[in-house]
Length: 477
Image 1 (cartoon, rainbow, N blue to C red):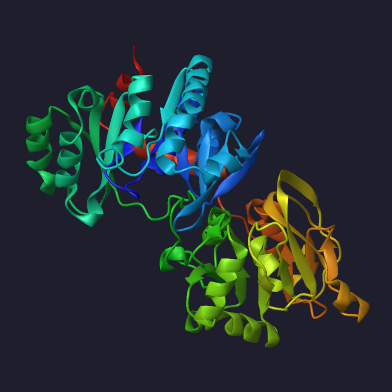
Image 2 (image 1 turned 90 degrees about the horizontal axis):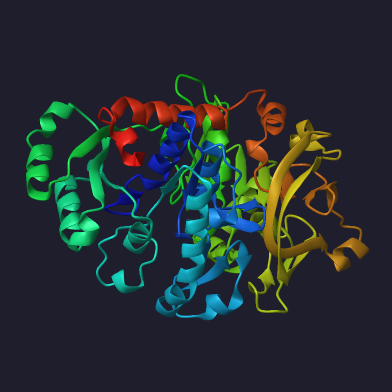
């Protein structure tokens, strides 16, 4: 099990790396995270799971399964989340108080873990946040309760780049009761920059205090190629050593979802991915992307409060490329209509003559098909076959009044994609198109590294920097 002293310490990518490393040893491997809070989700058999567990399953050469992330919380506001249990939205759990919810779901998440352990040689478990949040500990099912249930051998990872790493490790260990301390088999210093010899005598002093060795010092690695789980990318998105030919500005609103689908753009030579929250940041952008949203109406209200609605509209009126994906597509239309209290009513940006009605039933499914005929800036996609996935409550169609007046959007994906007559504004419901090599080749004439090469790179990295025999000892009887 991979635990962390904080969020962002490196649990997700280290879990992914271990899944691939153990799979390369000829073992049958599965990932597991009892509860994930994220608006980045993927479609699997039976529903949806957090993107991190989806990628971990692929790294393990396993078929992604709802049991690998039995409880997914998708934040819709600061104090409200949609609860997904074993892949399906559970409205009763969504309305339940958090502390009561944990007790209700524990039998389900524990059974999922038991089944995965029975079916696999190795299960690599990911924790969440910190296991030492004493105010939450009685309701925390994702960290030490899971560790104790599985009798997992745990690594505790910390982000040394933030400072205070030894205090984080010691403090976290010290706040655990003895039976939980006994499960900590190694400390990991992540994101280290500099000469590792300068760390001495810190690791030995920490071991003297705790009895736990520091089993790895992992160097800072910006370009490992795995999508971020909890945050957006930074300006290191420019491909190294290449001239930038396309700047893609992605609007990072508060309830952004499925941001991991843009990782391939970051890896395309000559493409710069730029995350924006203010109008001035759109300057110099070739593309403006409105990504998915877990709560379209509130993110659209935020867009207007920032003045980004006018900036996006001005970009489109100048002939600049605008792409809306899922919630972003809904924003591009004329109206959001919410008869069931799912998301919220409101006017759209009016860049496509469409209307969206939010339905109680959530669409969660894989998609494959081909683009129709596109015009203008997006012509290169005409006839291109692709695959992706859908996760949305909204159903979008031509705005009836505008259609009657002759203002009709050009349908380019049957019921799932439209563009304006000028050809520069495109909206699609399908996530994951940039992960399809055929789409990247059509748009850029280039490819990003394959996921398998990314996973192998992660496994090679931990193999190089973990202490001798550490990874074998973690799974030996």
